[in-house]
Image 1 (cartoon, protein in one colour):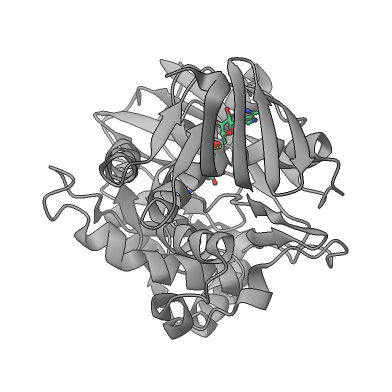
Image 2 (cartoon, rainbow, N blue to C red):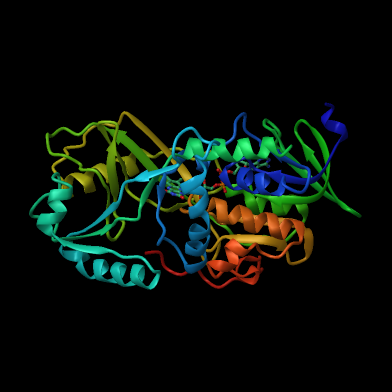
Length: 384
Ligand SMILES: Cc1cc2nc3c(=O)[nH]c(=O)nc-3n(C[C@H](O)[C@H](O)[C@H](O)COP(=O)(O)OP(=O)(O)OC[C@H]3O[C@@H](n4cnc5c(N)ncnc54)[C@H](O)[C@@H]3O)c2cc1C
């Protein structure tokens, strides 16, 4: 097909989890084309996550989107994915003497969110993660609802749904121009031009840049770099089965095929870019984890970094631009873009097609005005 002559109802910019999941929903009732600047989908944040499903993480609307996503994650392997999308893991939050009050605060906030943190003493925390140093850990809290996500299988399921419904993906197509026509947009890419009635902006860290191309006001998203490493433990002490997170988020780690996956839980503001890990962040993670455990991390087999992109108030922003209803925002996935993806996709599709939010979203307490873009947003609430 000659891309110069392509015309679709909806162009989705970005083939990360947000764009692919939204496109799969939109494709149920409109022609949709996903354009991606990289050679393959999931090249940026989606391919770089810690892959944990945390029902009680994030501000209230994020938790509602996660709740609305639960059905997809628990049932998408009914023939569409050969493997389950989620599997049990559990997060063990650990506190040293300085972190005890934070553990209480976390338990309270999880309780308010309808979750539960099982408080455990130092002995139980060390039974769960024998590598914790007895003179460091003073208490822990177990979130049994946290799950491991198979991100590759999740994205593959969305792609499969998209293609089965007639949607298309064009990789190596960077959007370089968005020109408003009377009935929609001319989308200029590095590989041709597309006419579309509606544009969905699911460009991850680049969402505000896409608004620039369209001549619309930015919302003020902030990409923040997070670093991950994988390396061997140099002790016989076990990491245990859970993901282990410092309650004040100085570090987190978990077993990964015999090695240890770890992060300093950094949040360094960044331009939208192909994020790279910094030596200093890896060193910081190793130092902090070795102080808290006997794992004896010394070397890094593999490392990466990715951007977690937050709106000014930490919520996802989904819906038509306040000044142009043919431009749909789908941004601010932050550190929760994978586990909110199915619910966010339903919301994006409804608001793109001019439909009311589906019952699944209303059932978890979501209302369209909670999601839609507002140009002057309040400052972001602190994270747990
Ligand atoms: C270290 C780390 C740990 C994380 N852990 C978790 C976790 O445990 N659980 C969880 O749910 N989430 C986690 N996240 C967050 C999650 O990965 C993101 O929220 C999610 O992947 C964002 O998806 P996205 O589709 O919005 O962005 P992306 O995956 O970045 O996709 C956006 C796409 O838009 C494309 N694009 C941009 N500009 C253009 C253009 N001009 N033309 C064409 N294409 C363009 C980009 O190439 C990119 O592929 C983590 C993130 C990081 C970095």
